Image (cartoon, rainbow, N blue to C red):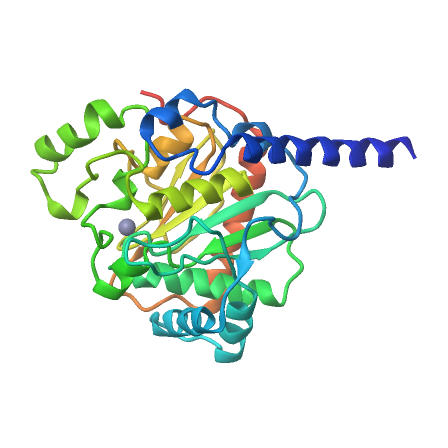
Length: 324
Ligand SMILES: [Zn+2]
């Protein structure tokens, strides 16, 4: 009885802690870089918790019928095979947070499947770069798999983080900003634009924006992180064909199709912002460009690896491998 009561108390305390963070965050806690840096890392109090969040979020809502059609249309447009009935089921179940709209007003929706009590929280981001649609295909495959599973961990998947870029076939969002350089890392103000000018030779594909967290899509992802408080973030990209982990030192799970290679991070990148600054680990999956999607079992294996990595990382609060 004591154990049960203790666990329940822990659940209440953790939920209360999360709700307090939400309550303190006001309407737009990430509306400027200055505000972000003044706040303590919001993901930390619950990031190492081992209790799953509630089954549904308080602020997200179901999609309207036209938005459900947009979801089906978008997911069906991604390369590779899929099950239309499952996509229809997923789009009927996806949720939308009020902050999650693109520059052109498209919904950035998410699918959530809660795990058994005690599971970890894994947030998956697909199509942060609009010209990498295969990253959405992997997200779609994982959602299709989750429909029929009671997973150990809780998964929240944003299959298309940059819907305008997907529509326009551009890496950037509709404002010409590389979202993976727009996160308000501690070094953004001093380095992001200088790095872009000096190292990137003003490559428009990697423009970090005029302000940290100045893009709606970036703010959406930050709000998702704040609400879901993931133990691990999985960011899916193409075309480098590698696995890259920003997190504590762990024994990497074997995956024969993609090598583990350190890519480093950049001012305003998700890895820099979440792991280097806030110690929430980030797995970057860089699928091979040009190759057809791997067989289903191999895509499943990638998802399982993510779960294993989340478990290992949660047990190891060890030194950063990216501190420099
Ligand atoms: Zn990318």
